Image 1 (tube, rainbow, N blue to C red):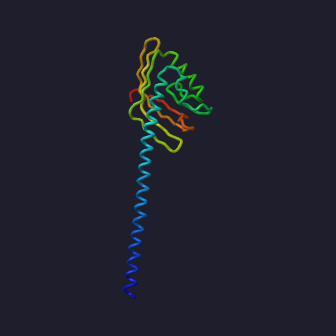
Image 2: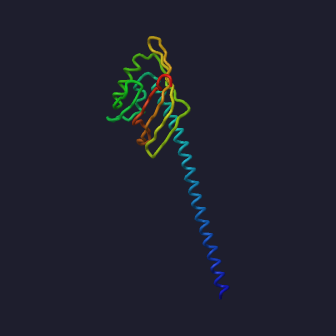
Image 3: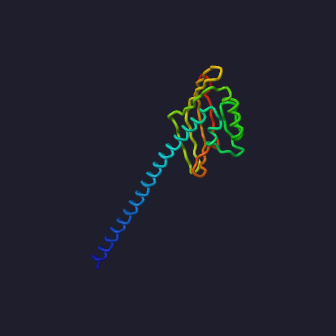
Length: 175
């Protein structure tokens, strides 16, 4: 009888180890699936926001503030920081201000995003940072080349991402 009890205990111990091995393998599989899905989401986000950022730059490069309107949320109370003046409150003020401050004297211009785009996302909110370069030729023939820093805060609304805040700034002279 003693031998039989020892055999039963040994069999149960082997079953416990087998069960534990199955649990560990299932957990590892789930973890690998999660990590793979997260990497795939990140690659998708990087591609999505690269396209959005390049299209954003192309729209602002038109010299018409109507072109980038599709990238912005329109409700009141949103704040957008630009190179000049300090801030715009709401899309309408931003649109009208940029049209007056920049585009009224601009003959041509180009805003281009650098290769250093960084995307961070939490659910339906994402923020992007990237260096940009702005080239301008004014109607009186002057040219300007400016490097700027850009931060955009995006919110997913339906199938689209829209800016609820953005911030452009130029480094201080000599930096």
